[in-house]
Image 1 (tube, rainbow, N blue to C red):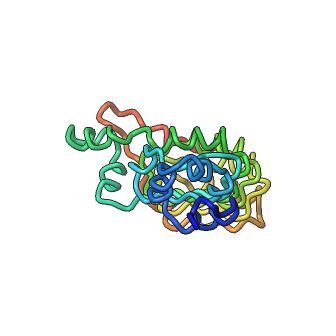
Image 2: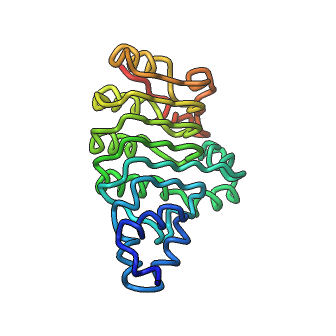
Length: 223
């Protein structure tokens, strides 16, 4: 008996034990396994531990996606979290290689994955408010949003949570230095039953003026 003699349900079960790369490798062996690889039922959970993984063609984004995690923990995270005006040319070169990766990926998720229930983003130093706002607008079933060490996020993200977060049950904005106490107070007033965590966020030093005396947009507070 060959592997491809198994029914679709059994093949999906086998694929579920494999990581993304091994699933892709198996899909290249024959048409039957390739069709299994592209079955949306296989892709309800996606976890990425490197930004380079977002560029690989070894996964499928579809309405079946329920849980997404992008947790990047490398030495480059520290470089990404340095304010742009304070970076050296070498540090800017490092950041340029992945500057738009997470933002572009979330734009795809917001369009293709309306049934997303859980989103975790950690160490995404280039992530900006607009793309989290898109998720809040289009993924209206979202119940858990966990953001950690995403330094460019501001109170605009919290404003979107206040506006679109009726389904949200858990919100973490830990170590996000441009989140203010005013933004957190808005969430507490709007959704008092929401489980809110903001470890160190409102007490960290926010982005500072650049050499021209202008301030980053992250410094803007809610009216």
